[in-house]
Length: 548
Image (cartoon, rainbow, N blue to C red; front, side):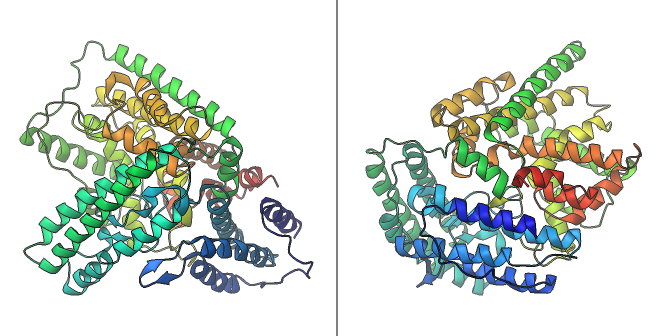
């Protein structure tokens, strides 16, 4: 139990701005895994704020009480006697620890309810490709993709009611928001304005079927626009920084995301990957110098043919090369993401620029959709892992694997007949490293938002990422909202490389891709340090993160 005592000391030390609790006997919460499952359910209920008339309460008093009560929950978790538990069961204990540290970080450092206007986006019409919505999201927001389509009468009525609550949401937001974080205020104002456009678009889509819902959506747009106007007036006086600082960033990496790196470590690793991507691209371009350059599809027929050929080729590659055990739900999950051709003369968003040249690199990244389908069709046998982890703790695992699949499949031979496609793989890696560094520098207080977008644009080949373009503008904003997410794509890939290395070493170099991928998927969407422990029996990556 020594490690539990050390963790308890860490928890108490980090809550220095709260009064010291009276001395008491150690809390004994339980000794069985079944008791941990019950505790987890209670913890999730505590983590969710109370609702008043359908609106979550993020008031100063409510948040101060939640933060104060968090100490007891952390002590109760530490009170579990896990002696004799399996590695898998112990991992679930650490997963709860990471979530509690995530709530602590939110209270101590980011407090989005008072610092981030974009936290109050109330309507998300588009799906996410990871287990739960990226970023700090207000409890109770309308996630349209969670409703079956076409909408039932009952679902339409529920959404109508929730849209009707938006005025109360924004009245509370006005009372809660009080920070001086300039970039978060300006960018959050933009997010709220964009939400207004989505309300109007949605109203037009449902007008014929559900006129009451359409009317509610228009009223929600009006409330959203009014709130954006108020934010704009307030933002003019904001002068402060929005990043969390290097020390806080490092704490978040280690104690919440269970990644064994500091801010400085990540800078070194991200710079290395950025330079490797550029050097590798240079040699690919040299090798392909006599081949025709990739041209973008310029009509729907050509684009549709490219998409279908790439889809069929990738599915065949997965089967014939024993990459994963293919299940009936996987091919349809991938096919659902095939996009339609949209005519455009200028530079599209970065990923469209890639996809219109060769769909294969992004198709590999779209392994996301196979993973989401697996979560639905083959739920994890652990109740604690069956639901998405809070605070995007899964980011390096989910985004890291999707990013790794691009280069892993290239190394496995997927691009034998697509030599120019290899160039795109390295361009995407350069883009992820450059934008991740932009987010890192924002939080390290070395760049503001505008400087970060320009930095990322500078380091992306072929001019495919203009600093004022929608892709990098929204990504750098999101990374500012959610420390650690921007680097998770590349850092997660690096951690997976480490896992593959140890996994293979333990088998004397006899690496079987299908066995690895199937086991990796069964473990679940957890921080890589926990996956590493379960798949190798080696706890060193987790110990390094928690300084144990």
